[in-house]
Image (tube, rainbow, N blue to C red; front, side, top):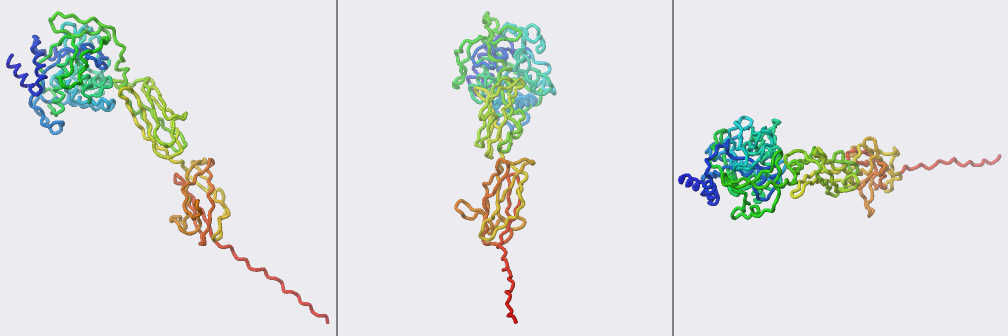
Length: 582
């Protein structure tokens, strides 16, 4: 026994406080080390993850035994990374391949549905190590299901929480009392609310490492926790098992796996050997030096209810004669199925419209609960930001819509303003840690696909004179009048209209100076544009005026500058001369 204690002390030398706590826990227990099948007992309640007070009630594992083995002294030599570590190594320090893949898959899934949680897969690995030794050293089949199933002892109140059967023995094969199930040790009532189907086989199986790892990840993220914050991470771990020793043990493995680890073949991992002993119902105190632990004097709260059974009391030490606390009324705290979890795009396509028109696409979002299922009655606020003049139908820039029973909320129609450009639509939902989606949108200038003169009259002027007839054109789009279309007018000389010209006809600017390009012309409500007056300089010839619309339609108009034709004087008949009479 002394040699065993010395080994444990050496093994925890990297953190004296952790080793001391583990030795104290082992010394307090007179029970033999349990095999995994009789090991960590699950417990708790589906609402537990939402509680941050320190109590033995409502913990995911019911504060039943867990494994206190600490990380090995020799830590990975690649701090912060595992990419360069060997593919095989010590079974004690490695993680079985399928189990490791499940932890990482859960991290990626939660990062998509609840990015604000910032769940690290190393935390799942630490809890999986403490709860079941990574599914009994990776004893899982090709689908990731523990074989044989992992079951904890009956939660019959004899040293553990008293939780009467809630599943008819469907998960734990016990129709009298509940037992914790699977590699992450969920009791049936907890699994009923938090269970996941992560491997897409149509089943939510607590004995499947993929399903169990994702369920644990969502459980840890509940209550709007950000696990990159030390205090939130501590609360999350304590929601799994409300014990400071448990928190220290998980923290030590978490730190170890953050330095790096390596993959080992399934079924080759080592089993943990040192189970904890449940301690009396006491409030956990903060970890030394962190200042981030839960309060040591939690406010009184009711014990969460257990579907199909009585509220579970806090566990007591085996044989100490203590009694269970009197059950308290259930709380009204929302279940995971009622708790807002994430906000996603529900298939909104590109947001693009012509100035003054209504957008064909409407912004639609999908709210999910903490389990990843659609969640109704969630208020979603949509806001238009930008200077294009775009608003929602009704003239508002901000509207709030509640999600329907399918979890979706659709914003009112967007009506484009008159100014072309880009703007954004944001959708915000949730309190505490709101989820936000941002959509880019574009307003394009009004367009025309055709433009033509309204008459065919020849346009002719003498050098230095003004063209007597005005140029009038009409723009259309899909045969309808194109109102408000921007038109550019450019004087060109060559017949093809390819080059600008510095001689010939011109417009006048505000100061009366020649101007041969106009860019501020716009069609009226009927799609008609009457050009300003056009003048001719002293250069004679045939010139071209090219008009181009937004959208690419164009027309070229011929302008002629020539001197008036000279008219020959009329011939007069010779005067008759009188002939003298003979």
